[in-house]
Image (tube, rainbow, N blue to C red; front, top):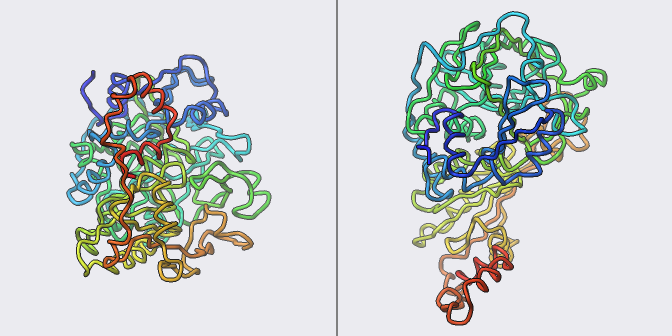
Length: 508
């Protein structure tokens, strides 16, 4: 087995290959529908490395890195995936500052003339309904004076309608939006788009940090450094006054200015309406719609010399839900700890259901009578702390928050519909990519999106009534089944059982 080194994407792939978590696709594939189709068909399976991309023989592509929880645990040196969020929480508490270097692999080749983004990068068309070929795997880096001395890293979708210009989405509620439209309005802001980054950088970029926990000016790359165990290396960009991820595979350098906007697709421009023309699949599970966004001017493309690796995560998929949940869940843990230390035991967002930004489940333990009621405060705080948060659930310590069936059982048997609902009133800022937030509203800008309201569900038992909620417990985990069944028979039976049945064999 290769020693685990996740300070670069290449090091991470070498490690994954050595432990059987990488599948190399050697046959020719097209970035038009084929790569996304293969990734979706094999989702929750191996990481996929495409070696032969039609029209781009000098480039490789990787996807599905974060699409399986067991693999994510191995990447970040955890025995169990459930522990990764706690490592992320420690990283938030104790960030490791970035390290500046003067030479970097990401700048082995510099293209600053005759720039052609689409001709250089195998940007995908994800579905037949896509309005264009969309770059979804780039990580925007804003730092220094443009982020109050800190570092900001995020995923922001991009559509390149010209060879050296495109659109970039700094959505409402994103730190980059505040920087661009408020603190540095009408200024030229240098930006780098980093592709193929170390896994810890990708996790921070995907996080959707809770702003009460991670404010503007925080060192978000410092969290990545702490998670990977060594500082993230930065290098000065070649053509703009900004920094790039030194170990990235690709970097697109450029700038934005709030005075310049462009439509994401030609169809949207002809319609002259935002949120109508089709775009590409979004994290909500719905087909996204095109908007009029910031215009991004490209000043250079830099990359590694030896067959640089493109990164093509699916915005709607396991990779986004799992990769984005790590620091997001850590933020919810930290929020709970600051409110009532010791109350929350664990946090989970289910994969495959818009987990990173749609819902969260808290597991609490009421150790004394004075803890009663704090779970309701937590519901309100969690709904308010995350823009557009739609669902927060609180359950007791005897409920397995990684089992949808067990959470549903708790909701069915413990939720009091008369007193157990906490609702955030409609009218706040919502999520533009959530169709229900704009249904029936002829909005003309993303600033007009209004939240329908979030729902908190208290599925915990009253502290003084715990005796009445004792779970029935059969001796399924105590009988020695080998006395009556062979190993082969037991293996066959286990394959027939659902995950919840196997859980209940131990808990119920």
